[in-house]
Length: 122
Image 1 (cartoon, rainbow, N blue to C red):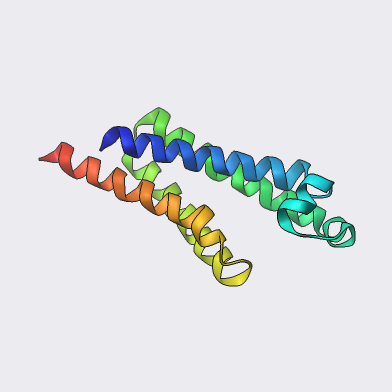
Image 2: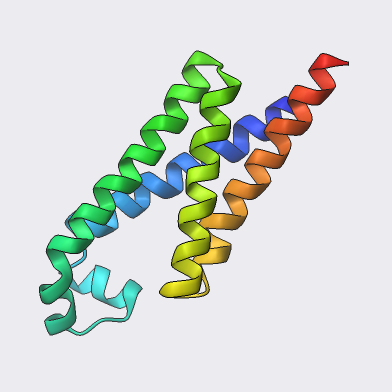
């Protein structure tokens, strides 16, 4: 359980660093426009907002790295819950696929973190 939890958190970290790179550096480039399905005008108009969003994704990844590095259960739970809430909000307000790309992996990671903690206590 602990290894699966670790691997899922690493997956969430990698995803959020990927989101950071896409939103901060490739939003207003052909690669980013293709991924997000935007016109050059749309990407140019929202580039600063996307950079801000990318920075927040980096903070989520950094918090999860802190949780893995420190081994603190409360830190892992807090940041995974933040990712889940952000994923649900994004899925409901922006694009439903965010539920599967952001919220679901974090939910699975949180589930395995809690299961691993429970089995360690028994």
